Image (cartoon, rainbow, N blue to C red; front, side, top):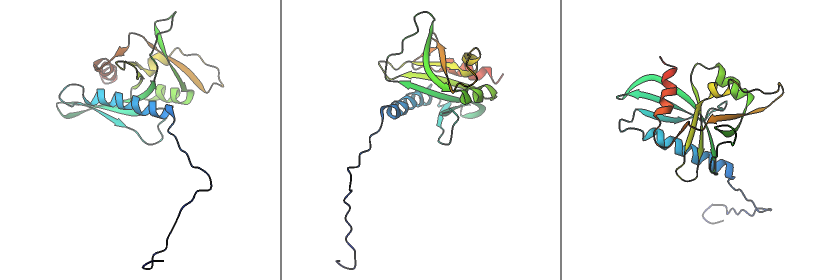
Length: 176
């Protein structure tokens, strides 16, 4: 010991490796893409992306709306899905399949008075965002009583890049 300090050394018995899995990376990049488009929409700064960090019941973030910097009280929950592939509509139906969500999250979306918007982002090319009111697109979804997850389809025309105004129109319908 030198000067009253103990020397500590660490030699792990096994090689420790931790790798960030691709699904986590896709999730982070998808949220960043949506965040950037919401926060940069219009010069007024009237739309704010707020990421949720607590247990979320399928809700990843919310969008809060202002008018000239004044809070409007309008918010919407966002469920964000991402892919590192090009999103291609189904052959026989003009929709895109954005994967599955849990049945419990689906029930949560249907019961809430706040809009729940599902956003499906491709991280390829121009990063298109497909969007839909989760209540609307899930209203006709049939599933077995013991199902854990359901597949959600978004109309292929519900696609935007930098213009989030179609998403804002969904929010406005809930606050008439």
